[in-house]
Image (cartoon, rainbow over all chains, first blue to last red; front, top):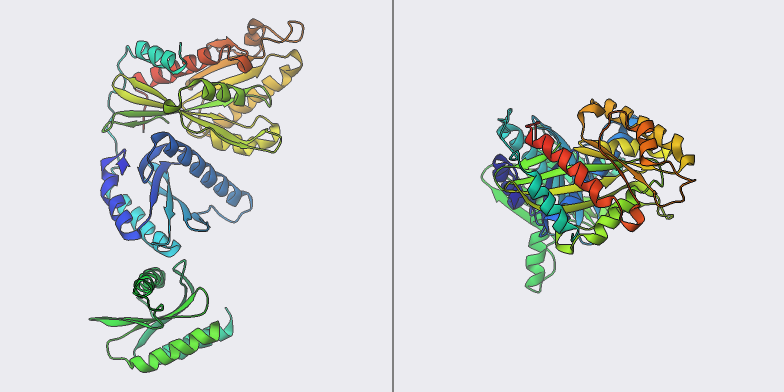
Length: 153
Length: 116
Length: 200
């Protein structure tokens, strides 16, 4: 399991243990990864989060257009694995959860424990994040070197 | 809601000591129909009971036996009973400690046959 | 908005390639995908119609390596250019850290470029983002076509680039200008981050 914010770790660990989910991905509404469990490649996580965020965004937009209301969650049942997607609000903004489960779990269990996960996250989420220095002023040289190596130049 | 499903659930809840009854999708662990007293979280009962019954079925099958036809979980404050029906359906009852287990089981089986 | 993980020292930024239909947005990503070593890029996700027109978006995550001690990753997105798909363009724009406007240099596509740029401004504004506050670069693609069919980068700058931000002439099919464009937008996005813009 990898988490961006340490306060996410404990509730997410509990969710994994209780729901027996195989893969969990928490992202922001724009598809930035916040936490993940079950993926092996960081770059695949980004693809999954981009697609998950797109599905949620388009489903919610569709809900608004058809006046059926914003969708809270949706699920897809494959032959051996199921996929559950849900949006929820935290002080940090709107987040999305993507859960993959197999026969060790069920949609009902995932939904049940996902609701609990959201409740727990709301309790532990900090309301303010202190500003911190990110990049040194002279990052350009490193960026140029990185891009050159990326393009084989 | 189909009236025959509702009447099946009522037959179970009419038994003294039964606090709730529900028809559950065994594979998804979701409530299909429910008749429960206040204070019973139907969605949680359905999800967790379906999970337990699925695991028990795997255990009995691993031991070379067929899947259980009746599951009874006894706790301090009462119990849970489940009868897998045809296909994906399962009938579940939430009971007090002092309940006529045989009668509840009979009604659960009737309901399971009826909704198949 | 950029995501910064101080614990694992990782930065993730979202860059959107915007522009009119068939201007070469997907070609930019395809070229980058073809040039970047496998270990430093993810799968290229393309949600396209049967005729290979982008339906929702293309997506390519790339790993820039370590910058100022942070593992830096960029998520590159394209939007569908056709006017018809504005709803999906809005969705893809959400949370963008920078935009590459890919213009079509052909003189006959002049109006399409202007319309698409206006559409970008409107869609950003609808999300409460002033385009003047967002890192943007221009790329004028198809500069390899015969001179009598296209406008020069200077002419296109006059028509589109009112703010005088960085612009690049390009021939994406053969890779010319693709690297320079990505470098240009990367610098702007990271400069903004270094200047202490809020990161979540």
